[in-house]
Structure formats: structure tokens, C-alpha cells
Image (cartoon, rainbow, N blue to C red; front, side, top):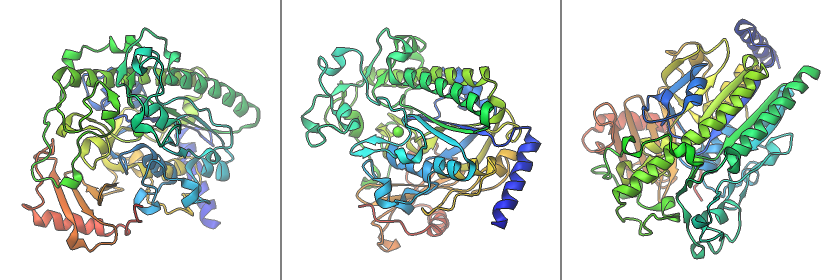
Length: 495
Ligand SMILES: [Ca+2]
């Protein structure tokens, strides 16, 4: 109790110094499958003026990593402050309340300790693949919309239920391979609100207006989580966003082989991308240069579309004069392979699937337009937001692995972590340590002795494209990084 009081006093002091009225509001922006292919991250091909303007108001984390490169588990790590290897929530169908019935999620923590009204707009927890999300995380009715959506009948063989539409809406889950494939992209002459992300932005705008009235009336702070579904496949976006990009100028993959000396368990061919036409159905088939370029064009167009929707929400926040009292976090749930290493989408322990965009706007605390190369993980968002809002640190009952990044927000050189951790379960569980320079991945069965592990080591200073596994050549580095990995708790079983 005494610690809570002291922590609240210190945080009120933090806010008063910052000029924010206490308690601050929170706007959490989640973007599905968004890698840092953004103007503010130095990608000159990206057209993302709104996310760039958001970055100019706070801190950009240049070495931020998800904890597992796939939707459902990654969102659980954000919402619980816990690694998937600590909770056992590794899969698209993993049910939070079956494994952790009493878990206190990030919005629940804000409602419980800060009296926040908590709202969910769009895709926050993963739904689909047998999962229903977690409505009990919010004290208001969530607004849900589609993840897979087509406007052009040609994309769905004339309006049939496609494989991915069925998976994401929990329909015909036992008949997926028999269903037709939907298109990987479409670009109709459509309005923003003809697709889900436009409607999600409209709903978020409405919620902000109501939240402002409530705050003026009785002081209730808001915690609004807004989740956008592009650039997740299929890359369906109005034509005007495709027209913003010249496909001949977009970056093509620099290295398309698997890393030399990489173990089979770590590799990937085919997978999610194969569920969309006209991608070749055979997992190891070559993609034509035209198809690669179309897919990359689609990713950048879908990102520009989502950027414009985020812009609409930010405009409203400004119009309502809420920005100065609102903490904003923009988070991508994991990265994305766009043909690098010959891999598409995510589900790996490699750099492109795990590095995420993370922006934290904390008025008066994080310097506008600042950036840091301090390492950060998804699990850190929960304790960071709690500290910024003057609430106690998360303490479960789920395990908590996150660390508050507030010291970094105040000083971009402050050291909170010496590495980021992530994992991915395949035939074995791959647990990874990413330092500023290296990534080590240890692949082994949960509970098996360390000597049974298969190891990967990459040196990003000398080999930024991960072309060679150096584990056999650099045993000292391997030992040092495995020492760090050994400090983490033993992983929970993956099944
Ligand atoms: Ca995702």
C-alpha cells in the first residue's frame, strides 16, 4: 500500500512537471502486420505522412521487437506484459481465459486502478482460428469489424466464402482446404469507409468525441484501443493509395536465399501467402518478378491507406484539444517478410518478422521528434503506460516480463535492457536473444537438455541481411548470449 501511494505521488509529480493534466488519457493504436516500412523510420519509398507526424511528437524506438511474430500471441504479450513462453499462449487459437482466468490485462489494469473507461475499436485481441478475443478486458462493448474483406467479386470467385475469410470469422474451420482462395490484393475505386479500417477510424472519432464530453462532465479519463487490420493480407485498399506509389521505385528484396548454415527447423517457404491467389500453391515455387512487385506494391499501398485512417483519428484528437493530455502509443504486432530470405509474411525468428514500429508520445516527458536505439519489447508497453499514468506497476496474476521504458523516454541513452527476447514454436521452440549487434536463436524441445539445441547466430553489424549462420564459427559469442538466455525462465510447453 505504502509503495502504491509513493508511486502515485511520484507519477503525479512526473505529470505535473510534464504539464499534462492528471490522469492522462491513453490512445493505443495497433496496426496489424506493420513493419517499420515508414517514412519516419527512414524508408524513402513509404508514403506515411500521418504516422510520420505522430513520430514528430514523441519518441521512436529503432530497436523494438515483438515477442512472437504472429497475431494472437503477440497481442497477448502486449496486453499481459508477459512472454508467450511464460504464459503458454503460443497459438492463434490459444484461449486467454482458459489458461489465465484471472489475468489482469492492460485495459483492465487502467479500469481497476485508475477508474478509466476502456474501449476497444477494431482488431485488438485476435479473433478467428477458433478464438473469440477477450471482451472482458474492456468495460464497454467492443466495436468489431472485418479483417478479411473484398469489394470486387472477382477477388472471391463471385462472392464465395474464401479460406481466410472463413478462418477469421470462425466458419467452416474443418473444411478450410476445400474453400476457394481469395485474391492477395485488389484496388477498386472505393471510399475509405468501404473497408473496415475506414469504419474503424470513423468509430474511433465518434468515441473520442463522446470521451471528451465525459471527461469535461465528470473527469473520467479514457483508454481507447484502436486496431487497424491493414497492411495484413489481403492488400485490399482503395485505388488512390495504390496510385501514390510507383511500383518500379519500390525496394525489392536484397537477398532471397535462406541463410547459409541455417537449420531446417528455422526455415520457411510457403505458408500464409499461399492462401491467396495468384500466389503459386506449391510452397517452394518461385514467384515471378511481377508477382513480387505487385505484392510489395500492395503492402506499401495498404500501409498508406492505414496511415490516412490514423491521420483522421489524430486530426480529431487535435480538434478536440485532447492531444496535450493524451498518451499515444503506436505499435505494430510484428514485422513482415517481403521476400527477404525468400520468405513472405511472418512466423519466423528472423529480423524482418520481429522488428516492429513503436512510437510513444508522452507530452512533456518524451522529447518531440526524438529517437532511441535502446532495445524495447512489446511486453514493455504495459508497465510503461502504467508508470506514465501514475498507476501501480502490473503484478499479474499472470507472470510479468515487461520493464518500464519511462527512463528511456526521459533520456534516450538510459539503459533498461541489454537485449530483447522473442520466441517462435515450430517443431522445436526457438527462443531468441537480440542485442544491438547479434541475434542468437536456440532451437530445442521444451525441457530438453541445452546440449540438444540447434543454434543460430547472426551479426547485424557485418551481415545486416542475415545471409550466414555464424554459430559454428563464433563459440565465444554463442556462449555469452546463451548465458543471457539462461537467465530467462524455462518455457512453458508449446502444446
Ligand atoms: Ca498480425
